[in-house]
Length: 609
Image (cartoon, rainbow, N blue to C red; front, side, top):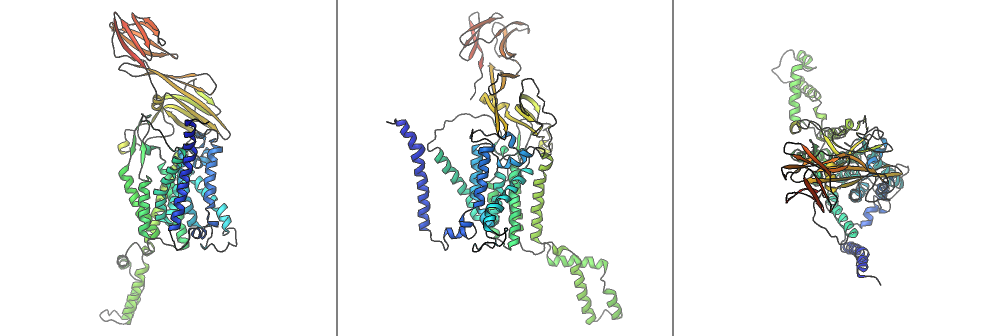
């Protein structure tokens, strides 16, 4: 007979999720019966999609999921995929450039992007349509218009091209499908602004909530401190998101112009504005020195507001000239008065110099002059819609072009700083502190003027073959957790490198610590030892300093004059050591020093979470 715990596990992991799914499906069925649209949902879908199914979106989503499972080896460790070789580090590392936008940093990253794609990719595919004429009644006569080819070949290939393009022109070592999701969203916003907005702001969150409820019906959460980390917005590839958004905008505008459609201006403006705010397109940031980050929130909000207006004009504005006709005629007349009309002199001769009377010749002169004035300026060809479209293309070029010099990065040297570094194939994994970051350089302008150089401390992974230089585990995170794993690899293989920190905290002073590093199945290597630190206590006119020497913690006793009078290893738990006239006793994780009946704590073992 099953125990109560086993029964509870079955109910929570199997029965309860089934009830959730059943309730959701029942809700959809009931609402469908209550709702009486002019056209059935299936008819609407089949009018533009083969069998009413977004085949291209499903294929692309399946491709991204398969890359995570089989290329990144998520099938072996779903929660810890191989990520280092699948980032867009440099143009000189093609594998990273081709796979970065298909790959993901972890399961949360993957599920979040796939949820977004499930919402907006079908809308974009519906707007593009498997049937070019939009009727869905007859198949095309060529492969370009054949609905099945458009669904299973053309649409997926377009998405793959956009995916690779977003990697090529993304700023920095990006990873993830989010740039393409933003392209889907922008394309959909232009064609179906309100539906897309509801999907992004509502349906996507509902899908993620449903997924988490099925995965963990009842969760137990304990409040606890977390490792130091950068602000959440500093981990977002904002330039990659903006790049994808502009790719979708340009493609959508081109399709609208080809089909001669013009959406409602108010809906487009509201949708783009709210989407930009909700999806963080205003989060423009950069790096300062050490662990400092700058968020340009005010300028970012201004950019989103202006962007929404310019895009709306580019999509919905008329072909009227930017310069009003009256002003244009005045400018033309001013220009004409300085150069003279080509017919003015012949008409003057025909009138015999008499300008006092109006005659047919005078009327001919006015018409000729007006015609000359209209042709004397090209401002009439500069329309509002073209101007806004040019502005969109200009911003698109700036966003994409900013990544080119960064992606031309070449790592000159990946030589290990010490013999303790781990070498696996072309990877070098080492622990270092205060080294210059070879991948990111701060901008020394305005409030960033003090950012002389960007230093990195922690576990550094580098490879000249892959143009990789990355601070994989920051030193402050390792100080919080005490250990970490770094996974390196490539197509078909993976290796794990372990890192561990141990330390002692002298009373009232900085921690003395050691860092060890070793590959899976091999011996530990001492990678780093910090400087010694003196306890802020005095006993029998002696000071106690904790040091790390060749992988061993020692206690050094000094007089007030700075003379060393004794050194002893750190005692084991429950044991004592004597040196320099002091007796040291270890009780659990605390070291006590005693002399002449006085006993004080001098250090405690560093604890991790």
